[in-house]
Image (tube, rainbow, N blue to C red; front, side):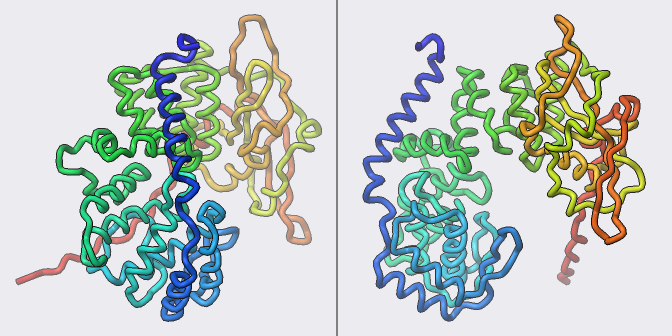
Amino acid sequence: MLKAVGVAQMKFLLSCATALAALSSTAAGASPPMPPEGIASLRASLQNCTGGWISLGQETETVPPAVLAQRLSLLSRPSVELSREDGEALYSIAQGLLAPATEPAPWLGGGKPTLTCPPRPTEAIELFEYLVGSTPDEMRGHAAAFGWLGYAYDSNLVERPDQKRAQRYRLLHRMHSSFGADRWSDGIDHDLFANIERAGLRPYLNALAQHERRGGTARIILADEALPTSPSEARRLLLFLSEGPLNRLLELEGTGQIPFATSASDIELWAAAARNLFGFRRYAARMLKGARTVNGGSIPTATMRPSIETLRPFLDMRQLAKADPTPDAIQVRALVTHTGRVIYVEPCDATPPRTYYHQQLLAARLYNASAPSKLPKLPIAKPSGGPVYTWVVLPAVRFSESSEGKPEAHFEPATAERCTSSAVIDATPPPVMQAPPTPRLRID
């Protein structure tokens, strides 16, 4: 089994098991419910706040302090029972109570405070410590909570400043995020991994790397440590559905420090990244580079075309509510495996478009671009020894408006000649809107 898994990977799995055992031994008593007197003190402090917590749910709304105070009752239970939204709301309370006590407030990531409160550092620190817990699974709210705690314990915001405790919190912040995390060194050196080892936080790091939502930065740290001796292990750690690790993997592939890989699982993860992450253009480009390499240099277009009657039961018609009329039909194509399974859907054009506008992306989403596994297998020619990956052109989409003012979708035949360039990868991205430069003050 050791040969099958690989020595480096087996060591990592064993270290994760050790980490989970070490963490579980403390989990039972970690992040317990907050005492009633602490909750009462927070409730009293929140009555003097203005502004509110900005909830980013289905609709953005500002939750005022009086309504936000209702969530304080959640502190009577362990933090592991809180939802993600609960943690973000409670984090905003702690941030609002601690930020006014700092001059100037440090930039730690996690956004600016949206609550304006009288400074109550004692209550804020107690709430932050409740939110961070003792294990990655207990962590609620934003990782910047570690940074706030590090700042607090290294200042006069606590009765007895504790630089060792402050450094530990800053190191935990850096393990969660590279944004706003600084001053984490113990002074011996500036080697991040060595600092983590000396602080006894390797079990926490290994457990954090397994966390589906928060593990990206931890995986980069472990991959950079593994890279000199095991590029394959570094690749395994970085091939993770998160922008940070994938961007690091692209960087290391670009410099040749990690060999370029073209396995089916590798290509499908890049396809998932193109569907789900913000940097979808670069991930789609990497996916297609892998597919072309597997094919021997290019991705052909199948001559067979699925009919709209075949596809209609599988369309995501919810997307239609967001559509505006389009003067021309929007071309769409799907990337399929040799079995006809769809792994990626994108808008396309006859020539590289100047920009990928919203309606083009919407047309692809109509074909379940965010979840192509919902589409049926598409009919393609399967010659022996033929390409592994093939483009299949789908019926073109033209959006219009009915006589009642409701959006409609019409489907038209499409040809390969009108679908030779990606409207995503080959397009010029929209210009980034930038604020005008701040005027410089002249001092005579």
